Length: 292
Image 1 (cartoon, rainbow, N blue to C red):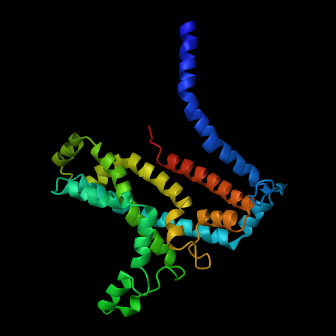
Image 2: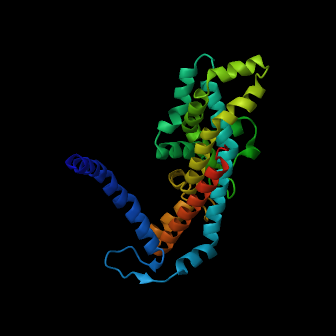
C-alpha cells in the first residue's frame, strides 16, 4: 500500500511542473481570451470590463478588414499546398537520393530556417525595394523595366511576395518532415518494385507518395495552423498594409488590441481562429485517416 502511495506521489511531483505551466501559459490564457471576447476592455489595469455579449463577434464578422485578412490566409494556404508542399517534397527526394553532395544540400536548404524571421524579412524588404532593390535592378539591367514594381506596396502583389518569402524560408524545415517519411520506407519495397518493372515516376507515384502519407498529414496540419497564425513575417515586411491589403488575422488581432485598445474585439478574433484551427485540423486528420 505504501509503495502505491509513494508511486502516485512521485508521479504527481514529476507531472506538477508541466501541469502548472500548461495551466498558466495555455489553459488560463485561452479561458481568459474567451471571457474577454464577450466584454469590452481597454487593456488598462483597473479599467472597467463591460459585458457586451456577442457584439464583438458581430462587429468582427461585419468587418471588411477581417474578411480581407481571412482571404489572405487562404492565399497563404494555397501557396503552402501548391508551392511549399511540392517544393519541400522535391528537396526531400533530392537529399535522400544517392547523388553526390547531399550533405551540402541538407545544410544549404535548411539554412533559411536557422535565420531569424526579422532578418529574413529585412533581407527581402531590401531586395524588393523599388528604388535600389536587387530584384528591380536585375530587371532593369535585363531590359525588363516594365516588370519592375513596388513589390510590397502594390495591392494583390504584396501578399504574394510575403507568401513566396515564407515558402523560401520554410522549405528546408518541411523538407526534413518529408525526408523522415521517405527514409522510413523499407528498401525491400523499392527492390521488389524494381523486379516488377516499377521504376522512375511509377515508383514515385505508387510507392514514395502513398507510403509518405503520415508526412503529408503532418505537413497539412502544420501548414493550415501556421497559415492561420502567420504574423512575424507579414508584420516585419508590410505590417499588413497598405490599407489592409496584406493583413492577416494575427496582424489584425495585434492592431485591434495594441493599437486601438479593443481587447474584447481582438479576443473574439483569437477565439474565431482557435475554433477554425481546431475544425480544420480535425477535418485533415479524418481525411488522412488510414483505412483498415
